[in-house]
Length: 87
Image (cartoon, rainbow, N blue to C red; front, side, top):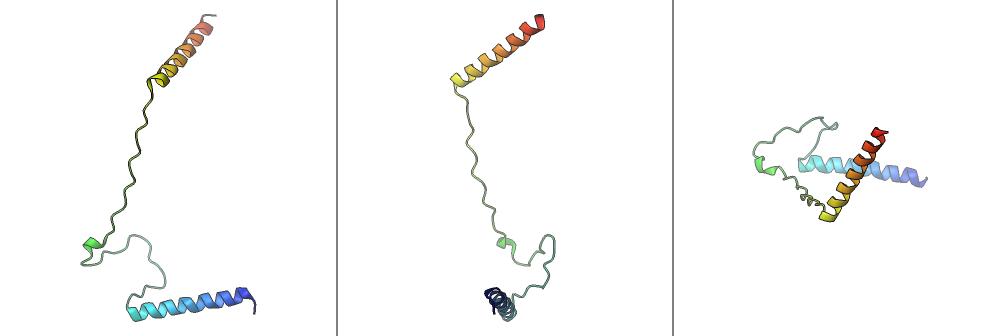
């Protein structure tokens, strides 16, 4: 017997045992999962887990020096555009 067949046999046995345990515990699930939103369970209003909110990202600010560099570059672009338009 190869290792792959042994592993597949063990996995099949584990699946059978888990099904048997679920049946005994009373938490059996249907063989095929239903699609869509799960039905509400009576008396489980507080059972919904709260979704962990992502921490708000810190707003990035521009330094006065950076703002001045951007303004100077924009003025240079416009000046070059106006100069080329005159020719």
